[in-house]
Image 1 (tube, rainbow, N blue to C red):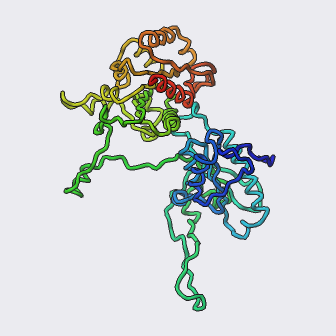
Image 2: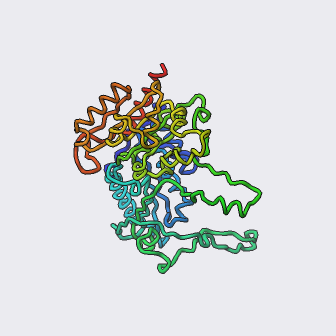
Image 3: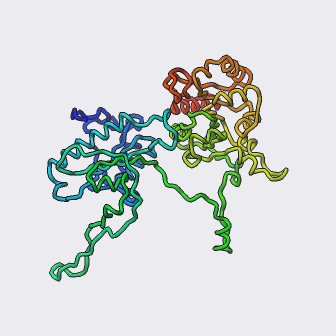
Length: 436
């Protein structure tokens, strides 16, 4: 951070005269254009948006912030992203050279620390994995401000502009200047980003790159208020599922997720598959009961089917059977992660949930890829090799072996699921070679 060295990364077109590019666009558009058109996305490790001159604190301000929006763009493109703002209380102090120098030094220290200690997917539950950080650093004369991890101040907008009367010489009328009405200390809860800003401290707020919607469950209320309209209930059980849902010219990939902590990486695998197939792919996930402990369905980036859907979708003999419809829809099934329990079930022909039922009814002409993930001692257990040998030899399933690393339980050794990018590359290889 302090060396002054510039990056060796160059434009996609091969030119190396400059590292900087000037785009006339919103911050979010700049990130999108840079990652898709100016640079190779695989060479970019971190997106930093800012510094914005002014605070980006509280849920309302952050929601409308272009600086945070650019970091959101970076996070949605799969990059570690940080939104940086320089906050101030006194405008005159904010423009002093020492204030700017102090804020810059603090910001560099925070950025470097966040980068070096970014939470690992293998050691955090889905509740604690930030997609990006929103950082506010105070502009003040004194160096080394206190730094706090904060939550959002749940504030709403008050008056943001102040009306100023124009003189007759300037044409009369009214104009408005930016002068927001800020909350008082009594209105702000300790531990929030606005509390930190008001006390000239630095705030770091971990964020998820998504909006939350109200869960759909208001059909009766809708019918009462709008008796002449019909609410469209869009659940997996009411959609087209089998051959009729296939899209010509696209690959159809069914991911199976089981009760391993590596199921945290299911959303990443979905994103990697979309990227490697250039979005010419349809993806669905079948999750076991315990896989759902590690990721939320709304975070998966595609439709997620569970055991409940299997039984909800069947009411009478003529109704479609979900595990058959999913089999008919898919070109390939990728079980990632495959835990030891499901491995044992598959090797012995058990089919007591939606995932194992899909595979028991699988078309043997279509490929299946298994990506085991388990504790090192479970991987080294004699049954594991026996089960895998049976699945490879009899059912011709493909195996992407686990890798060695520090596991979520703290043990060091082989057993961690292969990296999502490697799984996605292998799936692409299997589909291409099978088609040929």
